[in-house]
Amino acid sequence: MSWNVTPKKLFVLALLLVATIGSTLGGYASARLGLDLLLYGRASESWPSVKGRVDDGYIADEESESGSISRAHVEYSYSVNGNPYKGRRLGFGVHGSGSREDAQKVLSEYPLGGEVSVFYHEGNPGISTLRTGLFANPWPPILIGLLFMAVGAILASVAYHEAKR
Image 1 (tube, helix red, strand yellow):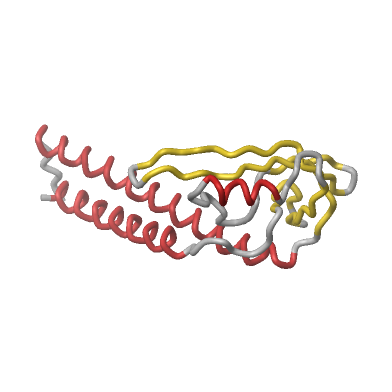
Image 2: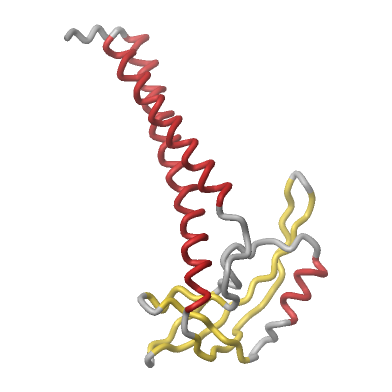
């Protein structure tokens, strides 16, 4: 087998390699995000809970091409087996509410200094949430991730066959 690599071909192969790595890693990250959302969201329904305290709460306004999104952020502290923890997760898949009024409504459920039920992962108590269950569809990031990983595999195959040519 002979590898005839010219500078032009080397440049094309380098671009293919970068695209392959980028596509594969981006796809993995997206799929992993969706899988974590699915698995933790479902598992959280049977997690134990402890009492915690709301340490901070605020609304963050973010601008996007489709308009403004307001998100409620709640920070809380809790203790498991005498070990202190801090958390910020409202729920798995809870992101933006869209309107500032909706975000304010969410925030009003968690007054500063108020007591909250914190649900935590028994094997890793640092993973916690205030709401159990799944609040978003995990399949789009999973499927998009798999698609990008497939594109990465195809690009790797093209690069290999191009190098052999």
